[in-house]
Image (cartoon, rainbow, N blue to C red):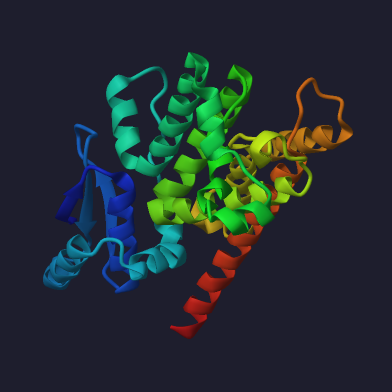
Length: 293
């Protein structure tokens, strides 16, 4: 008989603690409540309750401790995310936003930036967020511009395409490994893809480089999920081959220069490579930790 330990409103947090408990040889599982608005950690053996409560108190006092993320990497094969309900459900949408706060935050920032741009504020936004040559950044130290272009979009199609992929793939990573992992992927891939594109873009007025979009990050999260699905299928992150093929064909078409839009090809390629490399490194670290135990 299972014994309840603690309930969380965020599914990802519940799995994060559950994975750490498993790393401490405490068998447990995560189950939704009947109302579906909370996730309960259930202990398989009541005799382990005292130790489990002590670990839970430590987790609640310092949930961002890296040791919990490390356990998620190693024991992610036990994570079974609940299927999403079909149709529009406002409550489910709200709960999903709570479960994936970073995915929601980036989504919201992109929408707000695009909305303000439509209201005639594109110029001041661009002045503060667009990338500049690295030599200029070295002088003015405006290093936030390494991330800034990711939030700028130039058309409805541009932002819808990127945010659909971000909200799907970003949420997969955040639910499985937590917000800290998704933040790492976002920051590294945004900076890498923007730096790569900067080498192939001529500056315009005020040394600004006129490119933007979340596409480099989208290709990074795609590569991250794709390669982890290949390297660690037991972790539960999978991406259908048809989707991978579509994204790769889209990448090739950008280089062929036959599309009706200008593509940031260097950013897309750098993002994809970054996501794949990060997935490979995480898989390697997980194997080393398992071997050392």
